[in-house]
Length: 408
Ligand code: HAM
Image (tube, rainbow, N blue to C red; front, side, top):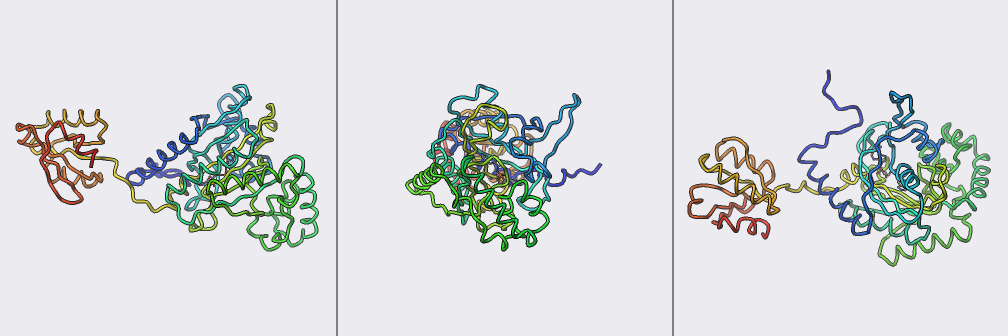
């Protein structure tokens, strides 16, 4: 058989995986700082969940789902995104009250693979359910922004829009449809087809960009409450120092959005996949899944894209590597390794007998900043520690090795 991973999927191996781990930890940290608990939902769900939640007319549902029948004849789909599953879980567990949750994991979309556009990709996200207030929208936008800045994505922009709600959207869609109808001949085939089902998606068509440049925008048709909501989101973002750009053309690829919609754009990435994340409010989603009404807002970030955009060097996963100068000292060296690990030091050692040179090479390959050399000085209660960056070497008491390595 050929040993290649399926098209559009990746193995994440060291040293690149070190940056992944660092970034995923930073994500967990930011989610906790903003009060988001962990949620885990299944990687596959009933197909109908996505058809109803994400929307029948979306490209995701029409062209990109990995759908299969299980042995019991059920139609299941590998999740193309996380929101529908989280809302399903919320409804299944009572569907009332406030719930703030964070998730991370692989998502699946049958796309034409390229850099930053994968068939299996990794998202992190939050969903803030049960709260209709604009404070929730601003908070969600802020948590994503803080995380992406820390991840080192250069040229980050937050694009913000409001898409209206069940009161004002129908008027807007009628107006837009009429406007598009008058320009039907100038639109591409895809847009002509989308226009009937989902006219707002036409605003996002790359081919028709010039034609739709003058189209009415959703923000121009907002009802009073939607306008107030949008103003309050913007005010809170300004107050919290989150820079944003209003983009009246911003529409999202998923159908469940009402009011706030936003994207994080890595302006230095290739335009075709420069959205490192996005999200918005989805006050109608719970009902469209057949549950009781529940407001919600959330975001998801594409970790593959965040890492593509940031240029951080992989961090070291070790504080030190233990080098055994003389195999007769293996027992005490292994005891030291075990003690250090229990004290919270990240340390490794070779499992088999190799030359000092081979052990130093291994330390270097693993990116260890220091080596602890266990040799005959052990009998005097000390070891040598060599700083691999400066080349300096010091003698350190055995009981003080942990403090020395961590305290540097
Ligand atoms: P989305 O915009 O479809 O939103 O995806 C969010 C992010 O996932 C994108 O901005 C992108 O970074 C990444 N992404 C999407 N598709 C791919 C792909 N094929 N390859 C690599 N990265 C990709 C959602 O998924 C919504 N569930 C966000 C949300 C949460 N809205 C409310 N709550």
